[in-house]
Image (cartoon, rainbow, N blue to C red; front, side, top):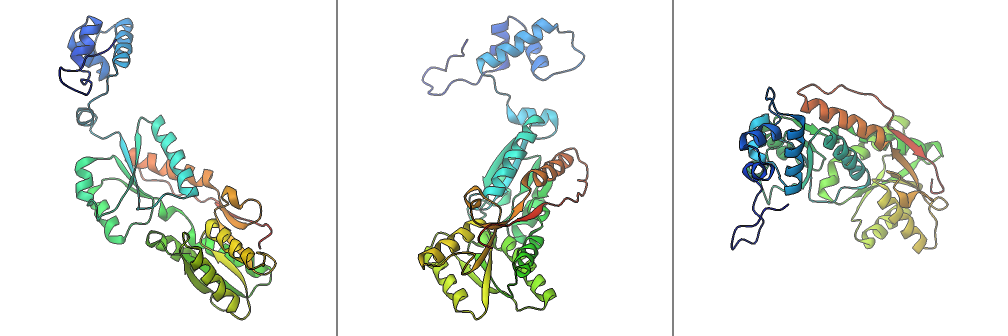
Length: 327
């Protein structure tokens, strides 16, 4: 069962209620009542099933603006990431959020937001989401613009205990006897907020323990020369025996740079990362984030906001150190 394209048109014609009514042998009003689930209409189950089955067979897609007007809201939830690919943890979170929203009839759209390409106002002319999930990496000005334009905003970044991650890295290293630490920041501007919080955690722990502040180097994960340059700084610093990195990817790069020098992470320089990505699970000591529990908390907050309710604050132990060979 198909709907023919209009003469001269390259695209199939949009399937209308009239097309479905004609195929079913019922009135257009009956089709409208069934597809819009209008209550109080005397329509038999057989007719209802026929209309729904025919609509599926014809490939009928509800007209989004009309549906939004009828429901009083959009079926779209918009996740904003900056102009970078989400990492291991963010990807896992987005998958969990996608499944949960689909079960509630919502569609998750992931947009790599960049205000140099499109302003918030221009974006909202194209998409009117019921909820905006800010994944991180946005400036304060950008976040303020989003909060002015959107009725419901969930800032995922604010739910991740980044300061605690840094403190746990420092605590693990110092528990092994290390007293002069290094820290590796990523060069990506969009990660500076998160990375800065993790660095602050290490700095706070060092202050509390009465040991020197960490030696900080910034690296470009796509440029091995910058990783090697950071390693040179660490090796030249008197007494420095351990380094914490922003994430596992950088930790593995640092371990590789050590290996290229004939040295070994864990023996010649302790290294601890964050995330427990699959490629780190043989050797790299890391701080693991319980993505399942964290994701459940984020999903619960998102669904609460969609129901116009206040998210319930939760307290879970999301972090643990996994000790391996490198530290």
